[in-house]
Length: 124
Image (cartoon, rainbow, N blue to C red):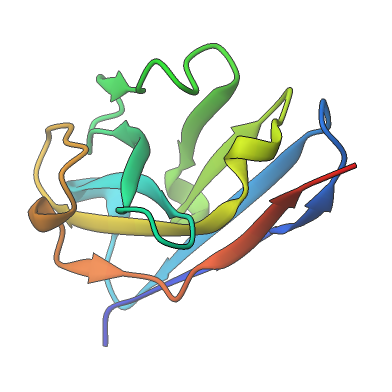
């Protein structure tokens, strides 16, 4: 059974850092595009980072570019989201998602597999 599981969320002060982990089981991420999304209360789900299956392409929205970095470790079947200089507006539940193919997309409907999410809270 294909599964994604996020970990690494928590509470940090503004300016702090967190690294989120998305571990896949039941399938190999070698052939899958992976993205990180976030959703704050009352807001739509927003894509914050995406990486293609070959790792050749990555994409970030302006709101996180230069602060967030997506990377993958195929040997561990895991994708990471390094988040630096966190701001209160980064507070949300963060989800990882995957779907077959070598492309990048910030559209949630492009992805069939989703994790349960991990909470990130940025507050002083």
